Image 1 (tube, rainbow, N blue to C red):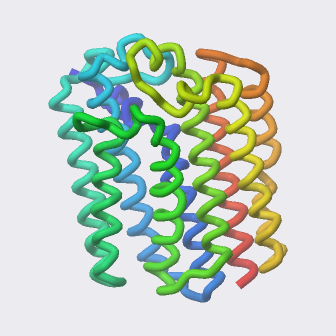
Image 2: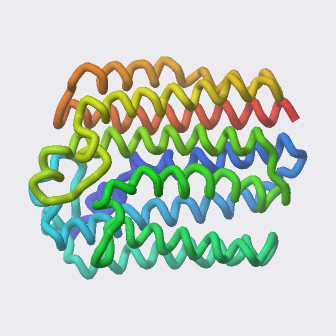
Length: 290
């Protein structure tokens, strides 16, 4: 029987910046459009957190029953380490998905009902990332999914439910956050190349190889800051996102230094912190520029 501390670790709290950051940026973009609505921002945050934790448990369940996590380096896997049964972890995943769905329906009811389609697609994407007979996360499509759902959908959805419109700064923010979120997954999958190769999990890192994966990580991080600089055309306050540069440089150096295995674990934390600090700076900048 897993302890509360193990359930918390199994939820992978280090990945939560990937849920919080797009809501911050989306809310900042809404404020730039004079459309900030605090309670809708909180609902959007609830949806994002519920889906992030849900997909973490879902991945734990699906990878665990396939045996992918048996020799994995990194945070605790509940099923792989046998501290919780597959059924318990699956129930936890669907409970989180249910919470996210309820909050999402409330947002749709107060914004626009066509957003239900987006919400349903997000739930399907969350489960079939590693779930089902043909999980797309095993076919080098994980980064595409992260960019779409934790970049474009999360940021633009947060902006739209508040401001009822979008602009190019919101799109730039969505692409930048999606890029850093992808970099986080690239670092995770770079660390797991040896075990994923043995288990038959074809992540993008496995397909590209270590060297190109390291280059991709650096390019994704750089793209985010390039977009923050371009957004300064709308308001120079977006340059506040550059407060995350020191952290970004630190993690990128580690990735490009040929670090492997456990040496890459701190990169996950640093990349998550980079994303959160970047999002905070960009959100404040957009708000000040409104």
